[in-house]
Image (cartoon, rainbow, N blue to C red):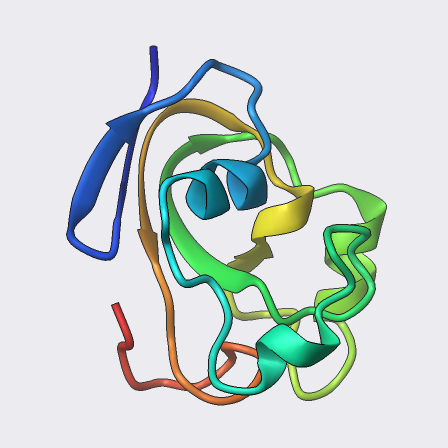
Amino acid sequence: MPKVTAQGKTFDCESGDNLRQVLIEHGIDLYNGNARVITCRGIGSCGTCAVMIDGEVSAANWKDRARRSLPPHKPERSLRLACQTDVLGDITVTKYDQFWGQGQKLVW
C-alpha cells in the first residue's frame, strides 16, 4: 500500500487511487484561498489543484499537460494536477502559494 505524505500527515491509500480524492478524504486542504470556489471538481480544467509530487505516480495525461501549459502555469515547472494523477507508490506532496498553486512560496 502506498504511503502519501502531505500537510504534515502520512496515510495509506490503494495503488491507483486518484490523488485529489485521497487528499480530500484525509482532510488535506488542497485549494488556496478562494480557489476552492471555482474548482472544477476533478475534471482537469481549472488547474487549482496543482501540487509538486516526489515519488511514483501515473504519467501526466493530456488534460494535465494541456492545463499546465496555459498561464498562470508554466509547462517547464514540474507541478502536477492532483485530480489527474494516480498514486502508484510512496509519495510526498507539496503545495505552493498563489491562486492556482503556481507560486514559489511553500504553503505545506
